[in-house]
Length: 405
Image 1 (cartoon, rainbow, N blue to C red):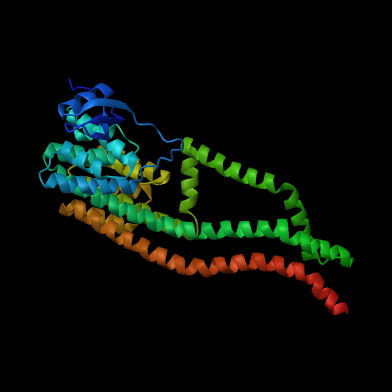
Image 2: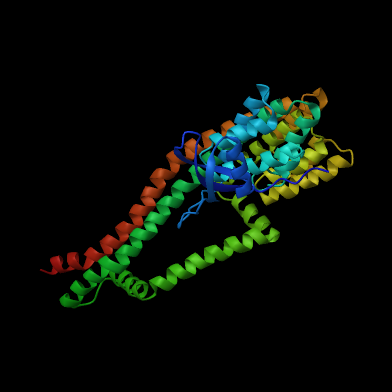
């Protein structure tokens, strides 16, 4: 039975060397007694050991997917150079500046040293190493090609990260502009328009309809702006909360996003690219198609496609071809189905899936470029129209008075 890995604690120590000089340092160890024993073997005497104090305010960085990608690339390179797995993990952990990654790799290294396989050790941290990742590592361990499979995982994650970055870039720009528009309008309603309202009150007379409407909005917003932002923020928070916990809500919202006029087509292409890239990587690693499709469904990032791919998995497990099963979902274009069919008939399914992924990744690149060039002037027009309308509404009474005089 594998020995359970011990939890390490960071200690700071002070002592005296053989020449009587005071020296100090820090060590990670299971206990203070372990540190003292280690230092005494090194010839250090009068050792004082205590736990390293934690900072009063600690802002721990989260481990991002790109951190795992970088670690995977390093691990693949070191293992291919003939360095043992545990030693490779230890070297990467020591050289990593991210405290969270260091702690994660240290825990994995302890488990590997205690006799646990790398894939089983990684599976204990599903937040950072999903089923796809651990399945590929397990296949590499069983086939004796761990370095090759880790290289495949690293290349796969790099491509998926690049795809995600492009989608985020396309989505974040309009969101940022809309947020700025809301802030600017709120400032105008709270601080600027009341000044004009006071001026108009001194003039007397009836205000133009547009001006009166904006003034009424300003009065309402001054009174209820805190409630407005609280309800808006609370609504968004509640929606996200329910979305994370309700499969029905996930399916409904994901289906709606796929039907959006411009962004829907972009998200479809990105999802198909991810599907093809993931399945190609799994198939190339020798993972059985039925097992691979479950991991592919989890990596799709869309509940509609997740359900569709799981239906494909059920059909394939009964003996149907992949192309026929995919066609029944109605989620994949005819070009994708034709290439999958060709791959199945020729025995080059991995190659065809890779070609599909490359084609749709390029389609996403082109769509993001086109979207950026299209949406920028459109948002400027929208923002200019909203703010321009408010400015014109404020100057209409002044123009009216000028016409009278």
